[in-house]
Picture 1 (cartoon, rainbow, N blue to C red):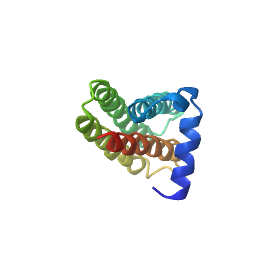
Picture 2 (picture 1 turned 180 degrees about the vertical axis):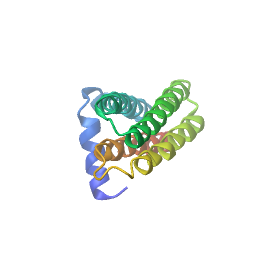
Picture 3 (picture 1 turned 30 degrees about the vertical axis):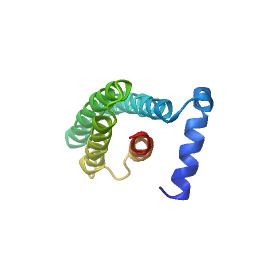
Picture 4 (picture 1 turned 90 degrees about the vertical axis):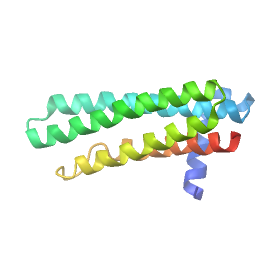
Amino acid sequence: MGADDHDYCVRTLKSDLRSKSTDLHGLATLATRLAISHAMSTESKIEELMDLESDPKIKEGYNACLDVYNDAIDQLQDALDNLNSKLYFGGMKLLKSSLIGVESCEEALKDVKSSPLMMEDKDYQRLANIAYHITASVE
């Protein structure tokens, strides 16, 4: 993690007051919940963009991103279940695989001049990486 990522991590975790009085396990679950929340809001944004789009090729790209985020949310929720059961290795695998899919969202939108999801994708990757690295620290 670079300095920017470290600052983002600290700032993000401090935004939730529970982070001040919890252990690494609590931080891992908190970070995973933040990633879930972000993925869900990104999913809503994609649905809004799809409704506004008339170009079938771009709509197809949004649909691919929607599938990616649906899968990511499922994987994150399964990761959270693993963390709650203290199955950290399983949680790490799910967190890592949730990252792989989201990278393909930008590829699906390559026909869009400036992807309206670029910032959301980047923030999601940062949040899921935070959850992954904290979980790895617990393990």
